[in-house]
Length: 177
Ligand code: ZN
Image (cartoon, rainbow, N blue to C red; front, side, top):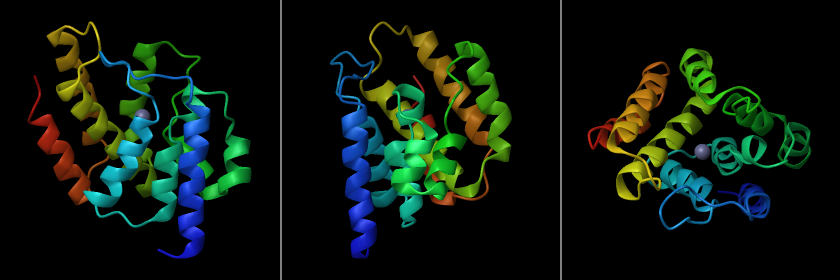
């Protein structure tokens, strides 16, 4: 990795940490939210063998538009149009009801770019690992199972480009409660 890539990587991690600073995950311990985008980046690099800096940076930023007041324009100014595009592809329209957002993710999966597919795979793998290892507070087993099945429906729509990540998804899906 060259110096420019290293610089943007650290800048993205710091940007995400700042934007998510007041947020917590849904697990029992209410872990800091930043653990989640860091887990995606770690998975992509160290388990998925992904070396595309735009994918790693987009993974670090993937929830900033959806869950904070960050805009797509800000991301483009700070990280460029490619990263903006990937983040926008994996951002849900939070003005829609949850069930509709979930259906749209399934419908849109086949149309995602290759880079957005990598981020989406990492997001679903990390979320399923979290559901198994530190379940969201108050989730009955049926809700955990529904979440697994919905994640699989999304991923089944984008297979064929990231064999290693897809295998990691299948591994965690095999731990369905
Ligand atoms: Zn996420």
